[in-house]
Length: 68
Image 1 (spheres, rainbow, N blue to C red):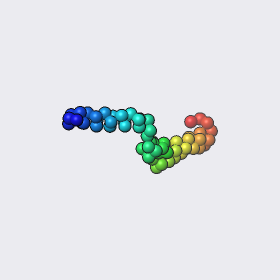
Image 2: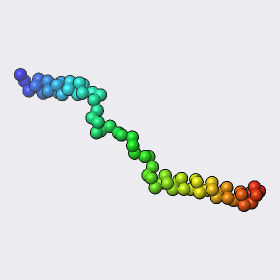
Image 3: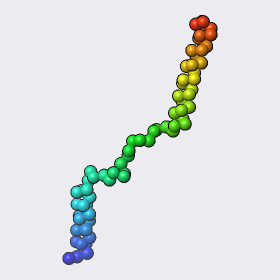
Image 4: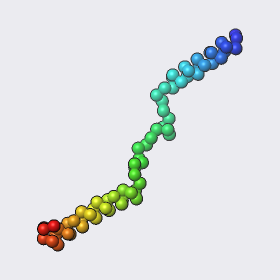
């Protein structure tokens, strides 16, 4: 058997091994989906700003008797 034929058969065997493993992804490499796209501090700050501004607007409207 020549060197090039052995080399070619080795490449074919490696390719066939990859074909049989296609689609079987290890559990560790797949994403879990538990991570938030933003941090907890940023999310807390956003909630604080939204809720705080709405409360401020309610208090402002109540003290001006609905005129502002």
